[in-house]
Image (cartoon, rainbow, N blue to C red):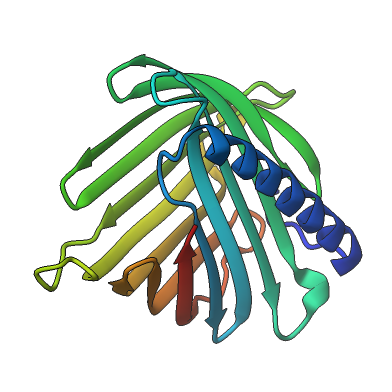
Length: 226
């Protein structure tokens, strides 16, 4: 279970390890090629505080080999011992225009889960779309569908001010459990973008198989593009 409750000390150890690892990978890949910005976000909601970041990087401007990383940490105000953590890494190869295949996995308090994935991404003017489907080759196999959709049209002639809208969602399910979900998440963002800063309203919806729908977390987000 992705968001199984665990103590704050192990969570912080994994968080610091993942931040250090992703930061080192970012520094290395940025020195080679700057592909897409890295959004680093903090979110203060009515129920919990959350931090997340993700990145897509290639070895160089002509390489088909790349890396996708995602990090998320959430701490409820009422009980920080119920904090949750996810760190994901996928290494991929572009097999065709917009289509990539690769592998890696994600780590939580429950341990490491390997993944084989195929992804499709495309950018059309102010719209960016990325979706991947993955298979988890474990004793009781799972699959996951993950999607990112961002739309950010300009609001002035220079483009320094933009509308910012984003949907990030995932659905992880088990084959031996009639395809019922292990967890499902939807993260919604609506606000403004000014140069490398984004801010506005946010809502996180999280479902866990064991407890059903968790309380919605709604509040304000602030994001910086590195």
